Length: 111
Image 1 (cartoon, helix red, strand yellow):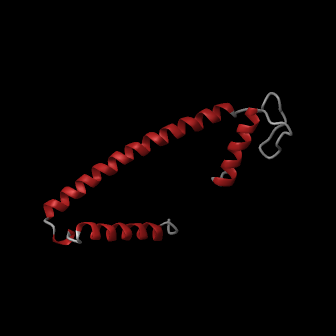
Image 2 (cartoon, one colour):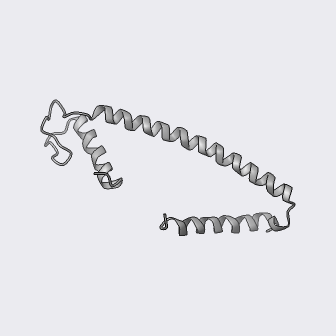
Image 3 (cartoon, helix red, strand yellow):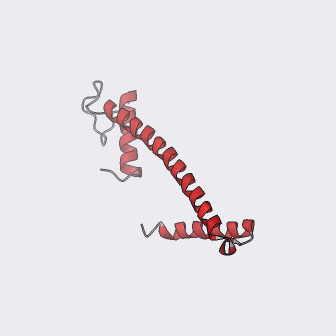
């Protein structure tokens, strides 16, 4: 988490700077009711974006499950295939398995 915090704080500071320029830095003088309404509006936006992110993650999960369904056993054409021992001729199924395993290992740090 510590590695992400500085970038997050820079982004927050940048947003505050843009907001101060755009709105004349009047937030500290605004009535409390106006600030509450602004926060409520932002929370509705965050909730909406949360729903959108949720639906995208659901689609990603469906894709992962479909890939896992394709990969449970050895390929009938290449029964000695393992993710570390790539067959010389890759059928579409072997290529999919190899690609997914490579992403899991190299990009996601999975065994």
